[in-house]
Image (cartoon, rainbow, N blue to C red; front, side, top):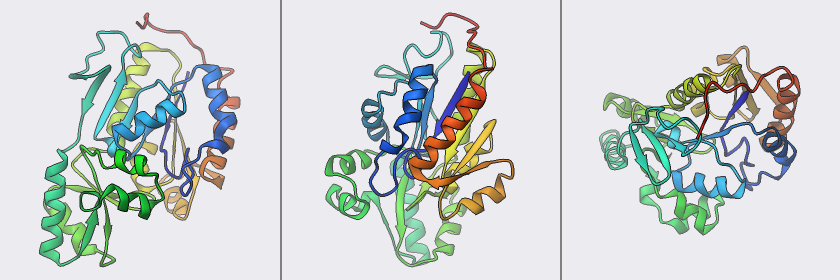
Length: 278
């Protein structure tokens, strides 16, 4: 069985319009085959739940750059060992509490004199205006738990980023913004979820699709990494010599690559389950 792990913004969703329309054919094929499509994103749980409803996705998802993995009820046998439950999800939390991250960011900014502006500092109206989101999407983007997106107002911000690291936090870069995180990353959740899929199903092939530096870690741990064409595609390709790079950016490139991979692999990959999933 093919398991697909995908970034959203700049990959499945257009970086400017947030539309997934060019990926319709591949999304239909994934649903037709009944394959898991796992969103692996810097977006919040609230944002991802919106996109899961919009795209009729019922599979596990990874939020805020690996801050937490949410597994909907029924995806695995009941005894698969999640440490916590929230609503209708089993939850694995890896992230640092949001308030601690915001405090660290502001301390690093003050100590280095490098000004920043994070989502905590912006109203939903400002987030909407600056990043082309609807007001409702901006409101959902501010419901954060494990990750603070921020702009560096005094570039390049090298001293700021070093100060973040000195305080025991990590930072990464998405398509538009820097993010301060704890020790969590997308790879940890992807590897954990892959282990559970391998315990439940035979003949697993994992595919990862992403366009940003914050995708590098999880693209490194899948069987077939796919770099979505972007301004930094060559940089990602250098770090992942065996990765495929799409000819087109965004959902157009995502669509074509997914269809090619499914055509190559679904005929020979079995569907045998190792146990009943309830």
